[in-house]
Image (cartoon, rainbow, N blue to C red; front, side):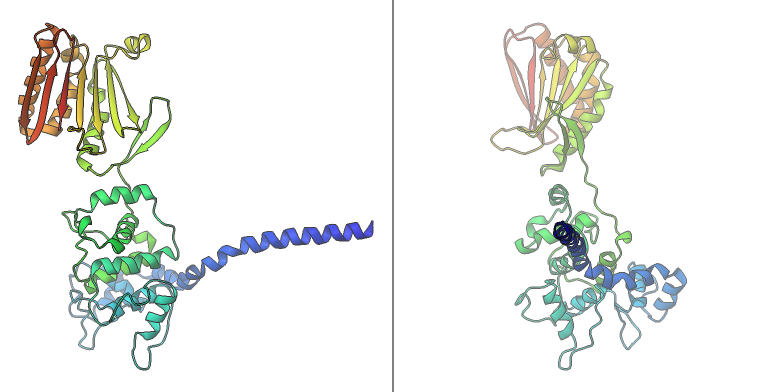
Length: 401
């Protein structure tokens, strides 16, 4: 009995030890958190007066846009000035200089190398996989923005989680010069954008081949260190149900114009004086709005809608169009749902909206009269639009490219 008791205690000890070992594993992962804790504490204690005092030592930081970021890095001893009492915020940064700044922002404080000052920093950068062996033939040449992205994002990933893949897909549509980014850096540019570590120009470009300036370097290094200084990207999304009632968070599929039009459609259905609702079709990757005379019509026969409007979020050249309107019962369209069509046409056709809506109204009358077959094609606001009515049909179809 005593032996069984002892064996039980031993088994319990093994279980507890195993749990303790498992629980302790994250501690190894948080080595960087431990290292930067002192930097973060010091960062919190920095006041505007301290920043001003630090920047007054330099003659070229008076009104520079990066001064608040750079001032903090000077106090943290991550960034230094020159002997002529300048910081040269618009001077390009060499690879070794940026590597050293990033390594310091990870809490490392190696002393300068005997033969080459940056050797200890480069060694740590390789050990932490901020850079790969042989990635740079020389570290004394200027670094460009896409190369910076890889280093700073890999450093950030040592202490933070990777952004959601859906957010990266959204960012791909937001970075206008994404195709110009080298393939090996594209992932890092998207991740850095998503986390708010860096951004682009006002026109949405990242400028991947442009040389990184010291002021820019100061901003990205501080944002890497201080999560509170960032504004992470919150992608536009639509929260919709499919026909089975399943919830979907719908993100752009590449063309922001199509996604914006879908947003307008979802907002504008409230202008319908009848009953309307929106669903998402994950197979077609389309947003569809259905319009009824009243809620009773919907309850009586869900398939008996008066009009539907479809927006495809994923471009398919073989389809030939991105938007379609199907009018199955034209009698009450003008009275109940025309305002929604006006909103949609306003987005798509701009100054030529009235021309498009005039044709829409004309086809309503043709369909109501069960008129002859009609098929008209126009170009409004550089968009192709086709109206088609079959003889004897009570409705018509509009396709918009």
